[in-house]
Length: 493
Image (tube, rainbow, N blue to C red; front, top):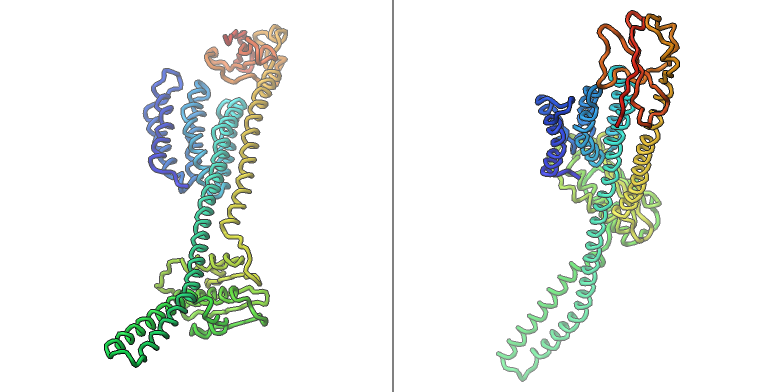
């Protein structure tokens, strides 16, 4: 699921355009040229490593967005949010899609959320900014990441589908080859009989006393040709029918032929089905061959249980230069799956290697690795779809409920009523004033405080949704005493 280079280049251009536009705008939060260059380099690095290090790429994008937004939140939050929004959304989607294990990218999102909220509460704008950070990371980070996870599962299902189609093609080809071999066998029985009859008749003709010497020589040559044809046909059929005609070696014979010092434990006392016996032969022989190639001199244990669980283990051995293609083990897995068993091969804890196969008493309809993976992938896809819907719904519902709810809470808990405003007189100490516990904002945009004073800003009424929602009461203090007050009418329309 690697992202092509040209695709990453196109996505980087799409992510870079709002960054460049944020430098060309006339808004007060416009980006400086050096900031644009820095962000573009960071985004290029994120897009470069997202396929191999998705958590790192996501961390870079989250960090860039947080820095851009938090630096501008007090004078132009819109530019801070929008400039790197597409970059964060694209990177989050790619990180979710590329990550094999989602935990690292989920941790990156969580840490960015915590860091952004902490900085907002302690340094940049307070609870308003913290809410914006939470909403921004939810919409631009968590939701695209969840869709990326879903897209990865969907891609895996597609891949399994193609593998399944390939498996069906191989099954059809195997069936076709088996039928051809059967037909060839029938041809041998029919044609071989006719050839034998022809050879017999030609031999009789050769002994006919009325023939001349030249005719007798021709008959002899014809008989030899027919006999040779019959022998060649028999040789070909010996190859085609090797599995049926050749006796199956027992596991003791396979071990003896290997020439290795093998400890054999055979717990199977009853006869084994012919096809299953051939599979035991094949797995044991291939495993011992691998020991000879890759671990010469290692201790080997071969065990076959009464319920046909075959295990071949070898201990660690000195390093060798033997290089295998890996096709042998793949072939064994396919052979075991063909009869309805399961197979696994992996390094053991002591540095050796172990091959295990569990075989049925009789060949049965197989559950191939592709079938198992398909079922597992379909299950994971359904889980991912549900998870994506839940995450998206949760984030959207949280924003839809949380933002208006916070606006109401913020307005209601910071109201300085007209009566309280009128009772406040210049010269009063701050502790003697009847003031709300919270201020509406710390430093509202476009409002300046008198020199040498520290001002507080309060709501004028509890409704945060009407046309007067931006009106504020301003109380300014010097040495904890009120020096000025003002009703700031800041109409939204």
